[in-house]
Each structure stands twice: as C-alpha cells, then as structure tokens.
Image (cartoon, rainbow over all chains, first blue to last red):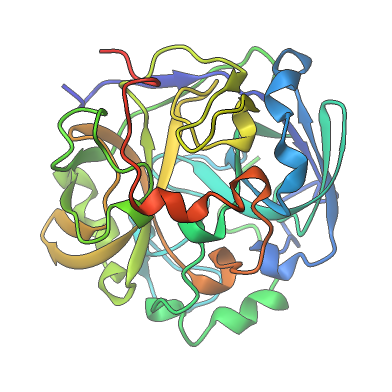
Length: 165
Length: 165
C-alpha cells in the first residue's frame, strides 16, 4: 500500500554555493553559467565517488529545504499565468525534491567542485548520479508553456515567492 | 545541521508498468523504447497536472522500494569492474531515489500514459517534473566509464543483483 506510506531519507552531504538566500538566485543551471559551488559528501560515503571524475556533468538530487508547503497551481518565475505545479520546476511542490545537472570541475577527497550551480547554500544533498547523454539528453523535446520562455532563464533571477525562512 | 537529519516524504502516486519484477527489466528508458506504463497520481493532486500536456517528456522521481541497503562500490549491469556507486545509476544507493525521463503520450484525468518506461510495477512516485531541453539536455557531455558501453543499454536486461524482495 503506497498511499499514506512515508519514505524517510538521510542526506548524504551538503551543497555549498554563493547563493545564501533564494532571492536573487538564478533559477536553473542555464542562468548560473560559471557560478561555482562545492558538494560536500559526508566522509563515510567517500568510496562511492570512485570513477566519477570521468563524467563532465553530474545530476544532484537535493531537498528544497527552504520551501514550506505547496500549491497545486503556481505562477512560475517565467510566466504571469497560473500553471499546474507538475508542469513547472517550482521548489514549493508536494514532495520538495530538486534536481540540477551541474558541471563537474574537480574532485578533492570528499568535496566535488562544480559549476553552473543554481542551488541555495547549505542545501541537503540526497544523491549524486552521473549525467549520461544516452539516458538523459533529449534536445528535441517540446517544452510546453516554457517553449517560448526558455531563453529568459539565462537572465532571470528569483524573487522570494516560493521561499519562506 | 544537515548531518543526521531525516527528510520524510509522502508519495504522490504509483507507477504501473509491465515490469512486475526487477529481473529481465530494461535498465534505462533507452532500453525500454515503446514500453508503455501508467503514472497514477493520487486524486488529491489532480490540479497539479494542468499544462503538463504540452511537454513531450516528463521526469519521474521515485523510490527504488525493491532495493534494500547499499554498497559504496558496485559492479554495474554494463560492466565487470567495481565502480563507485555515485558513478553508476544502480538502484541500491544510500538514498534509493531514481529518476527516469519518459515520453508523455496522454493524460486521462489523474492517469498519465507514458512510454519508454524502465521502472518496476507499483513503484512509489515522489514527483513529476516537465523535461525542458534548455535545463536538462546536454548531448555532448563525457560519460566516463559508460562512454563505450552506452549503446549496450538498448539490449541489456537486468538480473537480480540489485534487488531483494
């Protein structure tokens, strides 16, 4: 019985970034080009980083821990129309989990230096997966209401609408 | 203090697929071309699906609930060498969360018909995100040890090595 069952997870590390608060942040890696951050893996998981250096991008899975609650219809950063939350990447979601594909620059023991980071400082990290173009890259797909707005992401910066301290 | 803090989530739905058990399954959407499944969203979240129909792919985030425990070094399906778990997409991971980018075929109320599904039947669903090429598609990235093995994914089928009932 899945309905009503809870799944609990222990973070495996912390994401450090220059984005101390959600306001003013880039809203996707595309808007964070060149912004560096550090993924700190808790030392007990260090052995799991073997062989990661050969990948040029990694997928970070993390908790939107600065978001509280959710609405099923939201006005996203890039729009003025209310949209279903599952048709957006808004952080206030029923399950507040985020994914970002960032550039892997360097590995220093249990610290991974990354670029294009659009994640708040001190964010709890749940998983690291290698980005594999054959599994993850579909450049020709239709992006719905975002189709005409995708390019805005490069210059747009977040306001506080999805965040509560 | 992130270390030692637990994050608990309630699934938002159930993923139905023809893959009743992990053995014999495709190991990535690329190996599941044309395989159809249904994402059943619990009815209380229905309003969140508005505007999703315009996207041709969606990202499903789910729990690898048939996996128990983890090893930091694993021999992945496509290899004979042990690799760090974070350099693989193996389901037995410290935080057993999976992501799959599947094709969106149709929406029927709270049910989403999808294709290219590489997920076990009755898997707990945590989130649905729209796939946005500008955020998610990086076709030219280096895929480390998987670089020469990517194509194998199309024909490979899982054995039971990562699964316990």
